[in-house]
Image 1 (cartoon, rainbow, N blue to C red):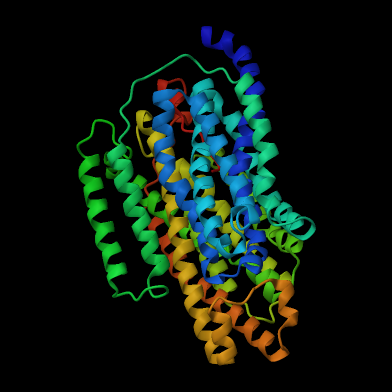
Image 2: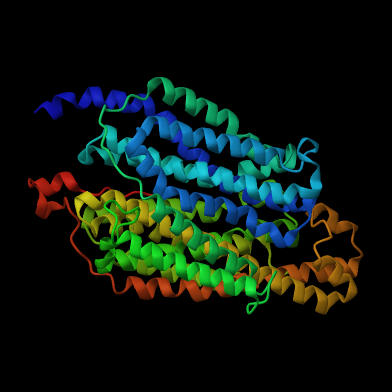
Length: 527
């Protein structure tokens, strides 16, 4: 066969560009994990603890709203140029994040606002990194051969998740938090150079019409919902005109989005895929996975560095049990699914594991030792490992071959938007609880701390009077525990949804051997 004869040449071509693709994916995966350990120091310099969650929310929101658009633009203008553009935007955003609050940009008074805005720009670039890297593999490699390459990519992603907290902590302790962003620049330059010179894609061009109206409506609706969960009951009362106005805007834009998607020739998110029960259920599971996982995990470094007194480097190392457990379980699940073809049990186990972990984490207080926190987050990692790979697999196996791209992007989208909502909602819960607890424990001193005027640098805690320091740490621990209590409510829905998934045989299994379905096997991907 011609395809077989061409395989060695194609394999050499892919291996030449694979390092560049892996570096681009590392940029997206590594950044969030690095920044999470630097957040307490950033807040220590700029103040504004109440805006801490927005440093993460802005990035995730930018990634979420741009992800569906990047794929369409790549089809229209060529994957290579668009991929390089997404890397360049990410690098510009990284450089600006590192410069936030510097004298060049007006000083630290506006530092937090600048950082949040630049993180949104960075997220817009990141939205194209993951989608286009996977799409380029699809351009170069037929479905039957993608498994080995996606396996390499999955291993690199897991390594980035493990290395990120350590690298971020080391940078924060030994350099400056700004290098958590500047470190992206040399990596990005290497990726750009490799791909610009070595990447040669097939000269295929299909004319598409980008659903700009649908993309705009979806972006506005999602942003309005995130603002509601962020501002409601915190910056504005739930019954204020600002919150009610945002609610009205969200309803109107999302209803219009549905109407537009039902009529346009090439919708940015085809609604027909949601007719499949499994696809709808696993989309809900992915949303809740992102909601609980991203929303809660971002508060762990704050707890470890302030309440438990860990350095930034050590707080990164303390996240290793979670990441290591997730990687090991995910590899086990992938191998088990390949051998047996069975997958329904794993999202159920993952949801149960996540719920148990959130309950354990909600029990933490000022006296919880670091080793105990490590055990709790290892349980969380086990739950994540059961879920991360199976959500993508089930989504891909629930649609026709022509909709595999839609299934992959939708799976990523719902997990990302769940993360956006989780970070913003849990941030509001944290802020409200912290303000209430500080005022009740410390009176006037607590009000001053809650006002945001204090610098919450972990090192500066030792300068507070003993009674104020104890009250602050107790309030902080209670507030973070309340976040995990709320996360339980969302985590327990995951196994309930997963229980209704119908176990449909995977395409390309033994029963399909020798048929053309074999070539349409959706490869399990760890995303």
